[in-house]
Length: 441
Image (cartoon, rainbow, N blue to C red):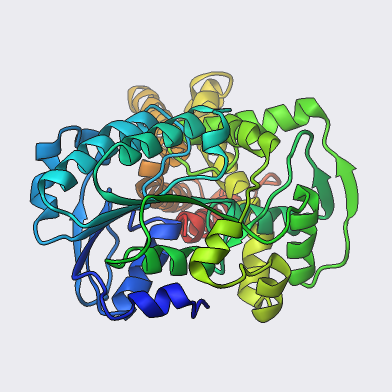
């Protein structure tokens, strides 16, 4: 996208090896791909590296929150001349460790290891005052880098959108596909920036000899109200205009609270109390210095959407965006609920079915307790992101077992009006659907 004078000047001297933090994220993965196409060797750092066919990429599985001393980083800096830090944590106890403590240790190690330069991806507006833990720790991380003797570059992007559906981009698409246009209270303007523009800037400024000791707002050409951004995505999805609905404050607060709860369970929800405070401030900046350095105009959202029309797959993703949390919530509550009912008001009926199937009183009691506890365990496992996949496979196995055991012991249940065995079939299908939706990207 960029063919600027900055890039032409820097082209003859690409870095020999880049240490890329946050290489598995939305921004980091795009930077990794771009560096790889330019023949740059990359030591890619992620907490849980994903399989990659990219040649010249060395993955290292690291938890940044545990690397808090310069000595912890020296081994990973061997042969590295540039560090690109795309790591970020929206909220949680690890945000200070990742944005500040681990980063400060890394920069100290860079000074000792003669690393040429560091490019930090921060966030727009954090230098103008903290409205959340996220912006406070991002600002402190910037200061830690600026206090060093390194050739540093700080990039402060606005809300980053791109073709890949992840994070804020995915949320905007999901909101755009709803039958009504939700207007949340207290949302500031956004100067959304295209992922391609940000990646081109990161790569250009990671080259030895590029301008250094500068902090740039990386933002789109114009501020847009949040509803206008959603409406542009809706038009991109080729959906008719939706009737606007101003979301009451208590419902908005509830939705942000649910986002926080989802994050407590390990799900990567872009909504939450931190996002609410950041959105209230807005995400705007001045792109003038960035344009001067890069010698090119940033791409507007309208231009980017017009260049790449939405495909059927993207329309389907947008429509399923809010279906996914509903599916996991329903399945978790279903399995937990069946277990609790079996141990509570449905206890007598459960024993009645088991005895009718030929079980003795003692065996029926044991089977009812074990079955209920298994159901509860499966539901709890589905609720937590890190166990959801295994729990869904367990749910399939348990469902098939109930179907077969019920068919053998009480085949007449297939003919009952409420269909206790027949209803297992849609539960199995819903579990299969959840397995297809469990991945975040």
